[in-house]
Length: 320
Image (cartoon, rainbow, N blue to C red; front, top):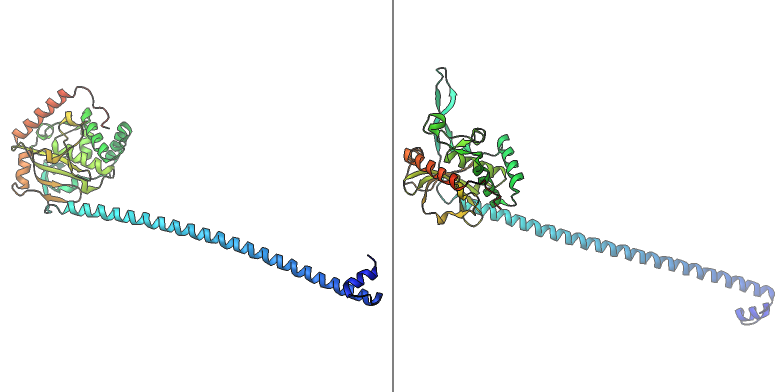
C-alpha cells in the first residue's frame, strides 16, 4: 500500500503529502495513547486481581483464625466444665460428713534433759504429704517396676510394692516398746516396718506423690468385724469409694473392691492431708486409737498378716 492509499484510508481522501503526514502522526500518537491506556488498564486489572487474591488469602486466614479461636474456646469451655465438675465432686465429697479436728498425742524420739521420750501432739493431717525425697524415690521406683497407666493402676501398684516385703507388719510395742507410735511416711520407708495406720498413711502419701487429688484419698479409723480396731485406706475412682487394704497381702494384686461390699468395716473417723471428718460419732477419736492398740486388734492383724504371707509365697506380679 502506497502513501496515497494509506492517506486515503486514514483521512478519507488524499490531501497531499504534508497534510497526510500530519494526520498519520496524529493517528500514531492516538494509537500510542490507546496502547498506553490499554497497558494501564491491564496493569490496573492485574493489580485488582492481585488485590482480590490477597484479600481472599486474608479472608482464608481470617476464617482459619476464627476457626482456631472457636476450637480454643470450645476446648477452654470443656476444660472449664471439667474443673467445675472436679470442684463440684471435690466439694460434694468433702462436705459429705462433718469436718473436725483430730489431734494425735504420742511419744516421739525427742529426748529431754532426762533422756526420756516426750509426749508431743500432731494434727493427724500432718502425717500425710507428698513433698519428700523418700516418697518421690519410691514413687519413681513403683512407676519403673509396674508402669501404671492410670490412678487405679497406681493404687494397686503401691500395694503391690508394699506386698513385696518392702514394708513388714510390725506392732508399735515390738518396735518401740510403746503401745501407739504413728510413723511419718519416710520413717515407714526407712524402717521397712509398720502397722496398719503406718502403711495406710504411707500409701496415702504415695498416692498424693502421683498427683492424685487429696479429696480422692482418705485414711479411715474404725472397727473390723465389730471388735478389732483398724486403720485402712479408701480411694475414690470417680464413681465410688474403693477399699485399699494395706495389711492383707493376698488381696494386693486383685481388683480394688467397693467399700459398699465390705460391711465388715465400720468407719468412725477419716482424714487426709487437708481435712478430717467425723464419719460416725458413735466412737470418740481417743477410743478409736485405743481400739487400734488393743491386744485383740494387734493379735488379729498379726494373725491375718501371717496367713496372708503364707498364701502369698510368690512375689506379687504387675497389678495391671
